[in-house]
Image (cartoon, rainbow, N blue to C red; front, side, top):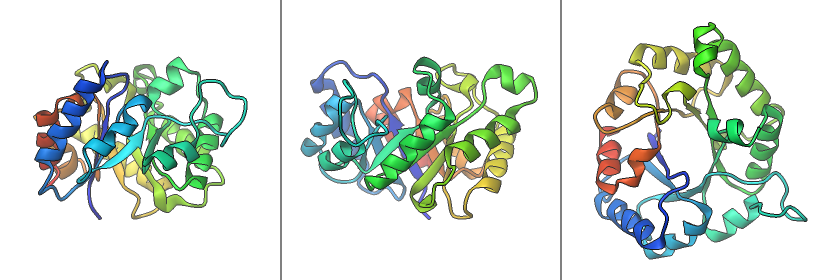
Length: 238
């Protein structure tokens, strides 16, 4: 099973020129990579993949739970698949926080993504308050069980453990805590399900989350916007 390294660009960059430069940097440095690599840019840059063919998969950061209809501003799984996306991120903490996405909504999105033939990076993780309150395992169990309720196609699901308090803060989750959480998550998924780590990942710490914490890859945020830095992270997974 290959490790999976996914780059989540979030709401960046602000123009096509920069997006293409990052795509091209990744393409140039990825030639001998043994890990599977996914790049998840904003929707408007998905088509730029045609300028950077080869070496990595394309992913989206979100989708809607209906295929078509009167849903202004939304993107369907069928649209993503048609434009060439292979993956989609679902359940990211920023979607849960800023867009009030519940476990039920996330479950609907997962089912619709699978119906469209997309592979999923399903994000779970506790907040600082939940961590200090001793509710980490309770939260992870609920998010996984509710998010995957009645989901049959588990083979196309990857789970990303992203402690909310570590995302974009520079406060890395310790190797010991990460290992404990990954082992706990594995109780609720198939034996061969890839479990990734995400949360302030950079090249200086990326290797330990795979080699010591037992993750099957990484979900990388801000560091994936620097092509050379992202390549270093990919190389650390080998």
